[in-house]
Length: 76
Image 1 (cartoon, rainbow, N blue to C red):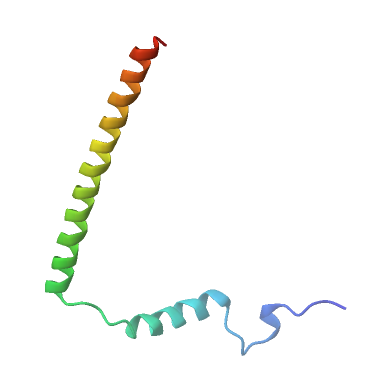
Image 2 (cartoon, rainbow, N blue to C red):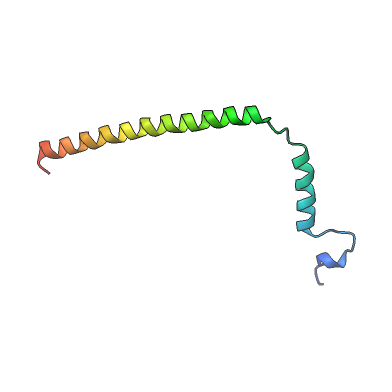
């Protein structure tokens, strides 16, 4: 026996149409932050990213010096 195809049921919407409609409904339920909150949180993210870049860069530099020092010490 053949399986039913989506087009066999005229009352059933295609999955893409259903997805788009449900997505629009969900987007109306989102509590969007105001402009000031968005700006402040963006500044926090940028600042923390810069701090982490500096910390990781410093750690990488120290490990590089340590590795080169050990290479020189052991003559490799």
